[in-house]
Amino acid sequence: MDELELLKKDWQKREANLPKLSYEQIYKMIWKKSSSIVKWIFYISIIEFVFWAGINLIFNDPESIQELKDLHIHKVIMVLNFINYGIILYFIFKFYTNYRKISFTDSSKKLMKTILGVKRTVTQYVWFNLIIFTTYLIINMYGVLLYGPEGKEIVEAAAHNGNATAFWAMVIGISIVFTAVILFLIWLFYKLLYGILLKRLRQNYNDLKKLEV
Image (cartoon, rainbow, N blue to C red; front, side, top):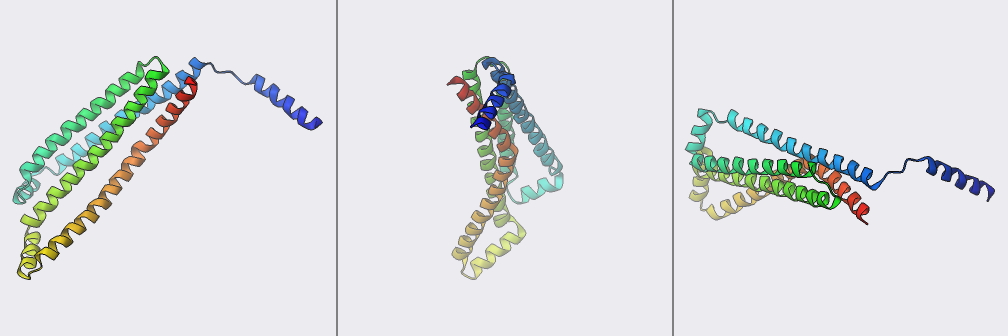
């Protein structure tokens, strides 16, 4: 018992020497961390946009354009590119406005609301990318199967052998599996890319809730 009392007294002395943080100090720390995280989300979205735009420019040579025309999907791809980049720029603007909001937030309630807004915007951004990629994939598979040299041969051979229904059932099944695997890999990429940042934001949100109690 004597040893236990000595340990308790020693701990109380140490606790008394620890710095006491006020509400404002803790809030400021959480605010700075949250602002930094949102800034990185904004920067990453710009880097990602520049990367994919660069890839698109590299493959936008006359030969690639002619291939798309031969597949009868060039115009559709051009329209889809326009929509894609327009919406991505909108999301980048949203990430920027979220960063500006969080930079000038002066209360924990507003900060919590902004954090929830950031999480919602990132989720919408990831879902948009998954949907747009699926659309690109379906259009390309359609062009290759119906207008590509190899695809046309396979389709004609299946129709000639009277296996058209079985062939299309197999094509749809393989396409669904292939698309699901690719989408899972893309989702995993975004999970790693933004998941860590969102996890930290979620922790900041929980810490703010504790402050409000």
